[in-house]
Image 1 (cartoon, rainbow, N blue to C red):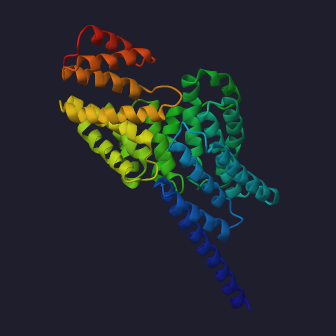
Image 2 (image 1 turned 45 degrees about the horizontal axis):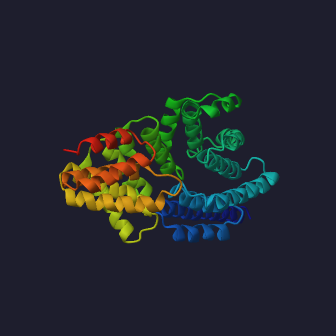
Length: 378
C-alpha cells in the first residue's frame, strides 16, 4: 500500500512538472514570436495556453502584450489603445478571481501587477499622468508582495528596476508629474539600472523587456550612445525583423557618426518595407530614406541623395498628419541645398521659402534665410 501511495505521489509530481515545462515552453515561444513581430503565430500560441491552462493568467496577459507591441510599432496612433485596455482588464479580472480563492497565488499577483503596470505605461505614453500614477500606486505593492512570496522569481525584479529608474527620472523630464510623486517611495536611478541589467542577464520571461528598457533609457535619458548601441545590437541580432530594434540601432549609429553602418541598417529597413515586412511602415521607411539621403549627401553622391530625400519628402507629406516633422523640414532644406549645388536656383528658392512657411526646427529658418540671400555652397 505504501509503495502504491509513493508511486501515485511520484506520478502526480511528474505530471505537474511536465505541465509546467509545457507552459514555460509555450510562453517562451510566444514571447519570442511577439518580439519577432510574428503576431499571428503569437496569437495562436497564447490561444493554446488559454485552452490548455484556462486558470493561468499568462495566456491573457501575453495576449495583451501582442496589442502592446502593435502600439509600439506606431506610437502616434491610438487605434489599439482601447483594445489594450480591454485585454488588460480581462487579466486583472482573472487574477482577482484567483486571488479571491487564494490570496497568496504568486502567478495571479505577478500578472495583475504586470497588467496594471502596462496600463500605467499606456497612460504615461499618452501623457495621462494621473491615471499612470494611479496604476503605478496599485501595481507597486503587488510587485513587493510577489517578491516576498517568491524571491527566486527574477522577472519580478523588472518591476523594481523600472520603478527605481523612472521614479527619479520622470519628475525631472516631465515636471507636471512631480507633485504626484509625494505618494510614492523615492526612486534610485543607479539601482534601477543595476536591477534591469540583472533581469536582462537572468530573466525568464522579462529578459528582453529589461534589455529594451536599458536601450531606450541609455538613448533617451542617459545620452550614453555606446551603452544604448550595445543593447540595440543584442536585440537586433536576436530579432532581426523587429523594426523598432533595427531603427534604434540605425539612429544610434548616426549619433555616433558611424554613417557607413547606419547606411547599411537603413538600407535594410527600406528593403524590408518594399518586401512588405510586418511593422515596416511608411513612417519607418521615411526615417530610413532620410538617413540614406544624408549618407549620400555627405559622400557627394548628389543624384542618389536627391532620390532618397524626394522619397522622404513624399512619405513625410503622407505621415505628418497633425504637423510637419523635423524629417520633412530638414529634407526640404537639404533639397534646396542640393538644387543650389546643381545650379537650379529657382527650385532651391522654392524649397527655402517653404521651410520658412513651416515651424522652426533647429535653426531651419536661419539656414533658409541665409541660403535665400546667398546660394548654398558646399
